[in-house]
Amino acid sequence: MAQQDIREERNEYFLTLNTIITDLLYDANCIIEHLTFIKEGKLHSGITPINEIVTSLKEAQLHLPLGLHFPFRILESNWMEIEKCITVSAYYDELNIHTILKFPLISHPKYDILKVIPLPTPDHDNVFTLTEVDQPIML
Image (cartoon, rainbow, N blue to C red; front, side, top):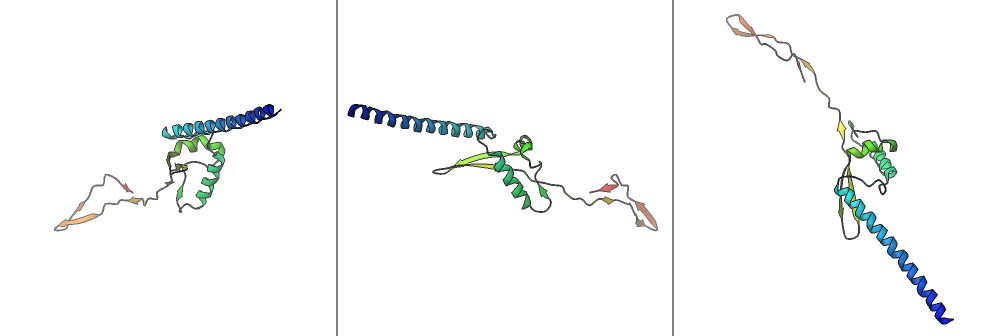
């Protein structure tokens, strides 16, 4: 009976060890896949928390300076367009891998449009010259 109990206890330990090793291998593969995608400048769709990124973008949009905005609509359904704009990089410290997502900001510049009107300018002895204008409108 004691042999049987020892064998069952040993089997239970091996099952636990096997489960732990399987989980560690799965996590290591996920990390390797994640880093491989980052190296290619992409995000792994199975690991990327899209809803959290979209929520963070919406929050960031509220704090952007006047006149700046993202070049895309911030919706989960619009993720493919958002992902095209992202620049991805990563670094690690002793315990963590940090993924950095950079999003472009755009602004619509404001221009002063001036219409150029050539005026006669005195040249000499009541003779005036008129400057020829190639571009009647200037920015």
